[in-house]
Length: 248
Image (cartoon, rainbow, N blue to C red; front, side, top):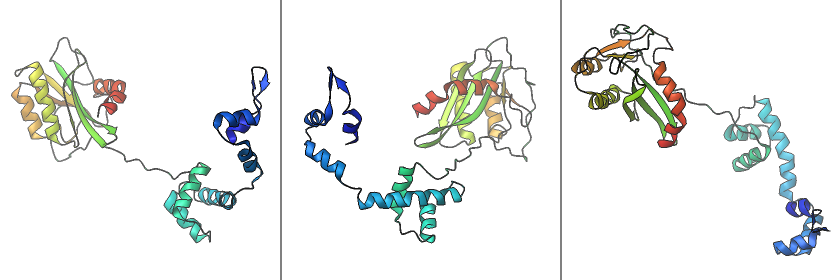
């Protein structure tokens, strides 16, 4: 009916379309259209028109944060005879919804009881050749299946990812797996290599330091709260975040 009302006055080939020609194409009897136009609103439509303003007022009175369940209970307490599914339908019709809480994901968990490795970089993220300075960090990607944690190791000289690992957790083994990939691609003996990270517990663990020592590398940890320490990792991640999310 709305389609016919919208298009009935259109001019095609110099003639007004009208109701009959549109109904003929849609295979709808014109009498059906005219009967619907004369018919008054249904009891459900009348009831919905009464309830929607009441629900909207309740929603605004509760700081516009109530979802279906809370708004339904608030309506019942206010003496409004309404069902839960009906509340959900009318909220959609009114274009209102509850506030959604997003889970804050932390990837850096510092263990204050573990000694920190020295800062061997001091924000000087430059290298004259490959395998002189690597930077590594943990981050996360929100996927349809949940949160996926990602560890990258990037060679500062070439900005190439030399090792990476994706896992459903962010424990030390995922970092060790990333080092194994880097060792496989860059060699098993890399003297003079510094591997810089933040102060996350994964990077202060004994196994992390031992794994780097096996290839002749030394760990380096930046200052606490220093957002520039792993800028190479974050720069690459920001550019490729959407592609990563789509890949998992």
